[in-house]
Length: 225
Image 1 (cartoon, rainbow, N blue to C red):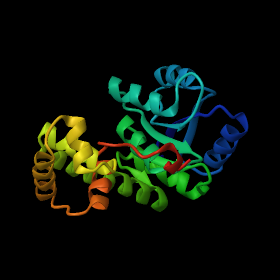
Image 2: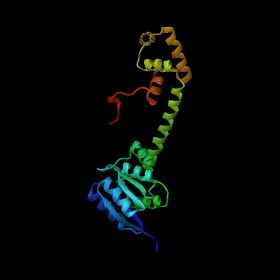
Image 3: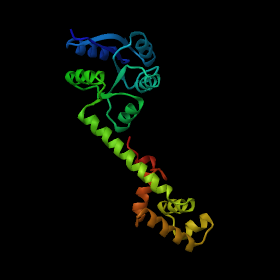
Image 4: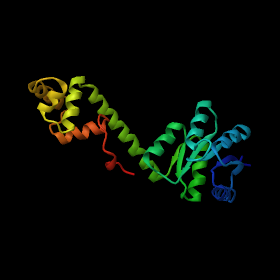
């Protein structure tokens, strides 16, 4: 007889927990060992019942699903974590992985996919639905690209960074020189050095670079809500 997978459900909405319970108990191979309405309860029940897999809502009172996952990771608890969320934003997915989650699913995932995800993480695998996997790939790629930009930025001298900041702020060479207390000719020399080192020959390109590596921030009006 196949041993049942022991599952804990943690979500602050009782109706959603009931739905998950029905999805799992209507199939085969699962045993619900506990339900929690917040992160603190989830941690206590995990310690008490030692489930194979914990289904954690990403946002709960007491401790979020990500915080619970991070604590389990720090404790080296063998319980595997599946994060459930209404969002699939890249940053959420990336933080879930960093926290130790083995799977990230939207709450509108199908019952078949939920059961498959639980079985996969119980086997020691990772499971992400195609849309979530795409978000994660985008996030990791952006992080890698930003890391490369930071390395390029570190190749500039402190004075060259100051000149770069002045350029992307729209200041003229004369204005940059006045601000930094150096001659216009010296600004021109630094400007040429910056463009050569970064291999960027336009102000627009320098601006994109400065934003991408965090040297300057975009205005709040341009942020995506």
